[in-house]
Amino acid sequence: MIDQIGFGPKNYCTIDVTVPSAGTYTIDFQGETEYPRGLFLALGSESGPQSSLSGTVYNGDSFKIPVEYTIGTIELNAGVNNLVFFNAQTSGQTDRCPYISQVTVSQ
Image (cartoon, rainbow, N blue to C red):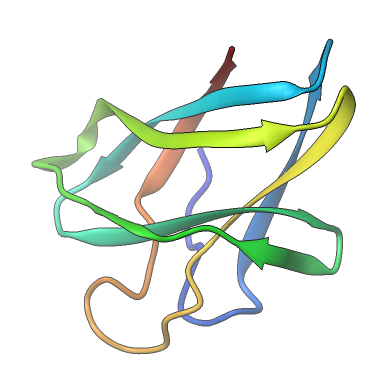
């Protein structure tokens, strides 16, 4: 479970994803939230997001019941790619990300 992402730009999670070939991939995640929460995805590095994609607000009914969400599509290079999950907003209810319990990458 990935939790406590957000509350500003320094609080993020990087996941390394290896894909066999360059192309467009769909990123889905299984997550939990009781409130509207924002999630951004970027390709990046250990030092944080290098370029960000538009954020999406996700709604849910419980922090105990996982829901499948689609983030969208992203261009990945063959080999290892760093996916950075973050929320750089510093105020409001959507200044944090939903809990993330699984990430799925598919072509």
